[in-house]
Amino acid sequence: MANVENNLASNLRIIRKKKGITVKTISEKVFLQEHSYYSYERGHTEPSVPTLIRLSELLGVSIDALIKNDFKTSNQWQE
Image (cartoon, rainbow, N blue to C red; front, side, top):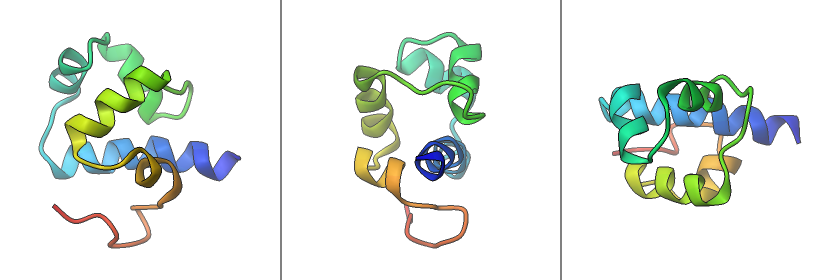
């Protein structure tokens, strides 16, 4: 399960940066405080299911891909 947690954290960071979205913007759009979103990207905490759905919709990536894929070692994610 550690890989899944690491994938989610790194995938959130990679996709957000590739799309040019700031932490402030993504936090506002999914109704979070910035430090809460940072904790997702660092892998310290995991988003709730409703938050994960909002993140998936905002980033344009399926929940399945956010959790299972490793975007830092592959080119699976393309805009």
